[in-house]
Image (cartoon, rainbow, N blue to C red; front, side, top):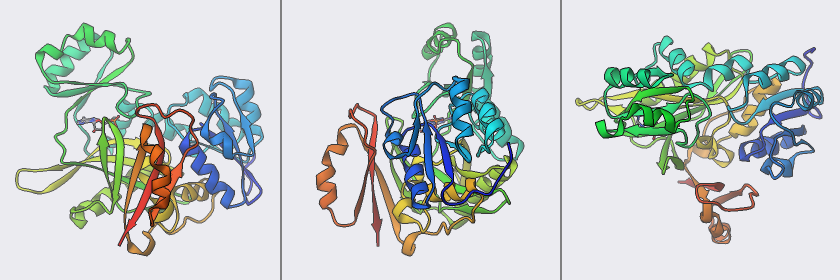
Length: 366
Ligand code: AMP
């Protein structure tokens, strides 16, 4: 594989065909790039807006090789692609973020180890590979605690809060997760959830958006407000600095999100605890399409193509609120279209199942 300059007219490969891939593809089109989407699901939202599509499994080496050879650069829109797939892609085309960054961030244990080694706090945690490990981890961490799969979790799937002794039958809990490798985390009594969405370029350039506050409903992001209201400017600066340390240490190229808990000490002081790193564009960055001078999707394309990063400041310094349209909420589309100042995005998904992200709406507020 030889690296070459990527310019307008080049082809960007995106692994994964959900709404994130769709919005990356739309931004790429805005810069005159062609997009090739690779996804196993035939009705993927990103296929609708891509020039080229491959519908094949993530372990189909032949299809992956053909895909990677057909593009000038490859990225992905979700972290649950197997390491072997990432390595294979990287043999045939530049892959950003790298397979190494993906490996660290797709495993909660490797990720927390990595974050702690940078001197950045996380919840206390223990690896759980057997029912006996679980008993020992509960003794060490106490209750309440959160038991999670190490890999392949999202929107609260693959996790369970353990509150009492009665919740703690180690064999039953272990069986519930089907014997998958697990992690037990101490429960963080957070006041709020915040995230940093930022981009890092190959030359180390870094551009962070303002700190976002995230409101979840049933473990799914319901709304993001920017800038996170009511936080001290030191806390906001500290959050952005943590994200930059993480991105630098990963030698990261592209957009990433660092999800954090805001904790408040009895003396009222604010602290930050990192929960998770998403090696991709992120739902809490959707507001940037209208709310920032460069959207997270355009910024990601710039970073992975080796182009200059754009301005990440908020449009006109406005406050911004993004609300997800989940399940039946997207049925209000015509009302939202009629609302002055409401920016509606629909993902083109067929069936509005409960909990399914169907679109989002962004409002810029004075
Ligand atoms: P995650 O899949 O790790 O992003 O977790 C989904 C949601 O569960 C988070 O956004 C939190 O609301 C909650 N959560 C996860 N881990 C913890 C924890 N250790 N302590 C308290 N709440 C948690």
